[in-house]
Length: 163
Ligand SMILES: CC(C)(COP(=O)(O)OP(=O)(O)OC[C@H]1O[C@@H](n2cnc3c(N)ncnc32)[C@H](O)[C@@H]1OP(=O)(O)O)[C@@H](O)C(=O)NCCC(=O)NCCS
Image 1: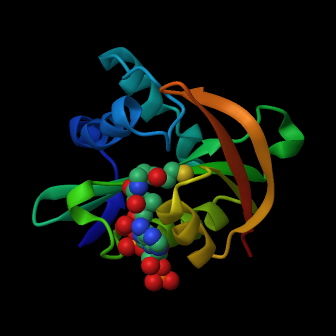
Image 2: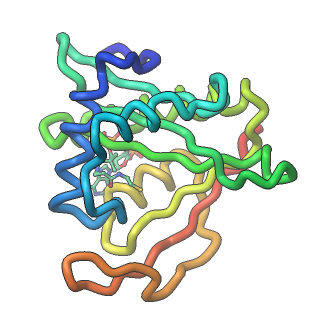
């Protein structure tokens, strides 16, 4: 498996993985797939490399992706970022998420990010386990903060200090 920077040509594969969760899962609170133009905007919002997008490729197939997002536009929050990590169903439970997160945290540190935040919906044991395995700890739980498919959802805030 190769972990590398995402290219624009990876966008169909990246969003094939993501849109499944947008349309059928509660791990993302997006509910509508992005348009072509929005995908490009998403790809280009990397803050000049500060918020990298990575893909995991195995035998020419996109197995997963991960990225950082700006946590807040307020300058004093510049040392914080939020993460996202999505693995194709066919590749789950084989260390892809961990490999993506390992590299993402390395790049975060190199870019001067010192805290990575994760928002994990309650009832997503895989994501919680992955983040805990990567050294994230729980800050707290936001109760009844979201609603998707008619279900009111709690969200666990997690953080990892990167040093
Ligand atoms: C969460 C997700 C990215 C994990 O990716 P993955 O490649 O399957 O995870 P890995 O195989 O690298 O496993 C990482 C750790 O999490 C644990 N884990 C993975 N899936 C698990 C599950 N279903 N239940 C419990 N633990 C699990 C593994 O045991 C492993 O721990 P270890 O390294 O200490 O043994 C993947 O399940 C996914 O894409 N889910 C849907 C999208 C999502 O929820 N993204 C996160 C949004 S916050």
